[in-house]
Length: 112
Length: 114
Image (cartoon, rainbow over all chains, first blue to last red):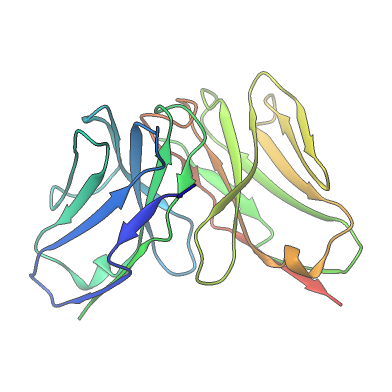
């Protein structure tokens, strides 16, 4: 039984570039949330999607965007990368928006 | 918005002893409180959660208590073992873990001394 998967595992970008991160939820789960985890801190909420609709957004700039596809997988896009965007980006899957959230292994983004 | 404070930041206990981690939250509308364990380089793993209509929940060596009046909740681990060593995060949500996401504490590094 596959858990939440994310790709790529690691990514190195330079300032000003664009990045796309991908997430596949647990089979049967319809909600995906995205979090940013800076080293030494707890995860910080970016977005939640349920049934392909954005249901919630955290305190992140418009450079961050996301979408959810008909198969419930999701993409997180970040434009005009800054050094401060370097972090572990985590995707969490849940049956519906208000249920237990299960995290994927994350994508480690380094911005140089 | 919600603010979650967690302490201590580091906790060292002897193997076999108990460990307690405490969190406070600011939003009285919060109704869902999960705890995650994160080992170095790995994903956060949900270990236990509690909703606001329950005061205490147990799962083997792990228990969580919730005091809604005081707006604090705690994680209790009994008979600690070396594999309990990790960073533990508490979180809170006013939408049951839904549209407003989870607000996390800064984490507690639990060290189990042999």
